[in-house]
Every structure is written in C-alpha cells, then in structure tokens.
Image (tube, rainbow, N blue to C red; front, side):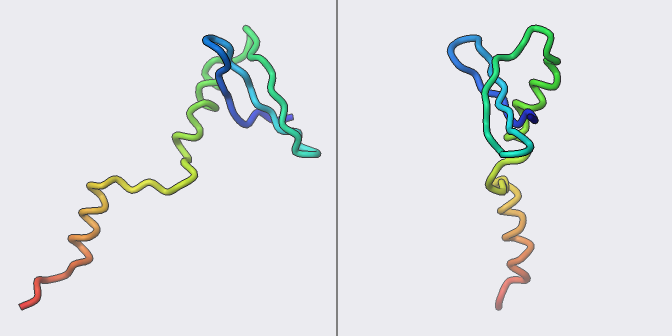
Length: 74
C-alpha cells in the first residue's frame, strides 16, 4: 500500500487514502497521532503543485499575446 492522498471527514478527522501496489484497490485509514505531519501536509498540497489542467495566469497569457503579435501592420 502506498499513500496517494489526504482527505478530511467531519471537522477534524484526517484520512489517508492508500492504493494497493498489486491490485490498485483504494482504502482509507485514519491518520495516527505518530504520523509525520510534514509528510501529510506535503501529500495534501500535491494536487495544488500538479493540477490536472495546465494553469496559465492571465498576466502570462497577455505577455504571450503581445510577443506573438509581431510588429504593427501598416
């Protein structure tokens, strides 16, 4: 089993989601008091670091449009 995500159930119950390395089955387990908090936070932040859709900020998009526009016609 490998941890792949963290979720929160209720007000204070953090749950770890594990995936079986052999069959791919997902299981949820409660976080234990002796679990490494920094690793849990790193796992929780993983979707923010690698979103499923590429993100381009509006400012970056505008810069690309200006660069790709070329010199003014005329």
